[in-house]
Image (tube, rainbow, N blue to C red; front, top):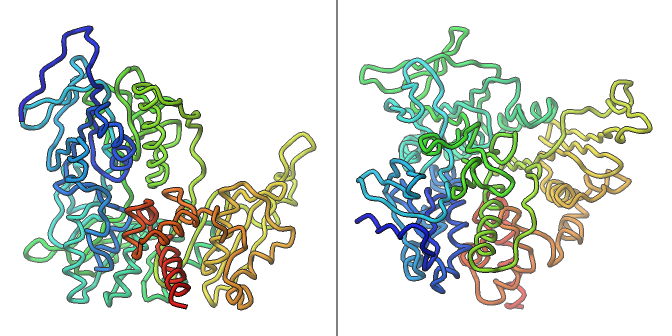
Length: 521
């Protein structure tokens, strides 16, 4: 590969050159949005990925580790198809630095790629905690045998090999990824212990009662939970392999494999080397342009549009990709300008596991009686107080909390109540009011609602959103099935539904089965 020739200063480019650094799910979405323009010859587009594999759905990495899905089913891009449309794809290629003065990306082998617009989609890397026995260098961690992170496809090989022997697995971290991995490994026969710092799993996002119910649900699924545990180091065997996780109280948790699920940290080293402003991520303005520069943009996990750190969730990154692609088409091709991106919406967090169904979002810390206390009661000029409704059945692992202002849902927790979770997610994202009788939500998981077909009609109509991550409606999926899509993978390729968190895949299967059952009848 040779460095492309630089255009003469001041000359108008024949075709605007866009270079994307990173080839994860967000970059794949951005590239897909520009493919028609590239195929029409209006743009030059190059995407550079450090992994050998093209883009795949990292959200399903735990399922891959336990053999519930295949890497091919997680694929989000086909380099051969992209090449036929004129997109240049470089995988297994590391970018060494960005030369902003010459508008060029320098690759590790010394060659360069000139750009008119550069998009950083470098994502995030797994956090490796500072424990005795682990390399503290976050950029070049060296994990001893028996220790793995859970971020990329290469990480799952160790997990898969340990599951074959039904060994003891220790998961460090009580977030969504750690809990999903723990539940999946436990169901496959491993002995699993989850170790986390706080008094409850998902401690930063769930309320105390909901967290306690979640911990009990985990234990019923065979997962041991060690809360309020602060790890200090590793104990290794004669050959340096992991043998136990050491805690600050002097105790140890034995295991054959340690899975690090301690969160992710945005990859900003390339931006820092280029002199860009960096906080928790690459600082960008409301148009996703890196601060103090004209031609560099950032999207996804590595981008920080406001004061809050990147969420690490897929849906906001896809929103960035769609919007920035629309902006480029407007500026470079004369298409209508997109509406302002606006602030990020509060995300809905889903825990996808067999036996544990959880959805939560927004303000959930308040308790039912807080609205009546003096310090929380709003005056006439202030906002209405937060009203909280709560229902709990710890014995059966069911818990629902609904927080509203003036009847509008602003936060909820739904554990062990899948139909209520679906309805509350719909109401939360649409900003709709709850029914005056809150028990209507609870009755969605009752036998009468199950016989009637599940959630409310509003949630099952053709306009209802089925795939939140990709923004695909039930009607779009039904149309795809009617046009010949007979598997979830077919629907994903046609509509993108099911390529995000995976929470809608059961719904996709139900629509496929319903269609073919009706056809058979």
